Amino acid sequence: MQYLLLIYEAEDIWAAKSDAEKAEIMRGHEQLQERLKTDGVDYSGEPLMPTATAVSVRVRGSDRQITDGPFAETKEQLAGFYLVDVASLEDAIEYAALLPTVGNGGIEVRPVADHSGLT
Image (cartoon, rainbow, N blue to C red; front, side):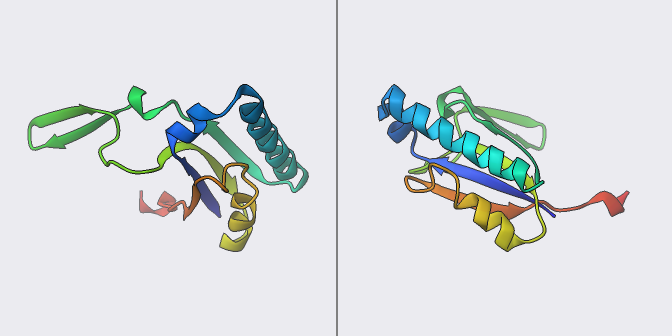
């Protein structure tokens, strides 16, 4: 089953890190990716640009609304994600706990819905 590991962290925490600290976090991601490969887990993932680069789009009737940034004000922002294909929620949680920023933010683990049979 596929699970999305949504990485949340306050952008100001990331911005305040030194280049050495950021490099250490990137090494942590590389280690997780090596572990996923070693374990034979199909995965993908990417970091996201800061929320200042985002727009939110809503359509209400014929009215299209575009606003800067994410819709909700939060203490932590979505910073990136991994999509992993593992046997169980427990396995997904194990990998989420290995993410290098889990100590500063949070990782939301969410199953991906399978709608392939609806067509």
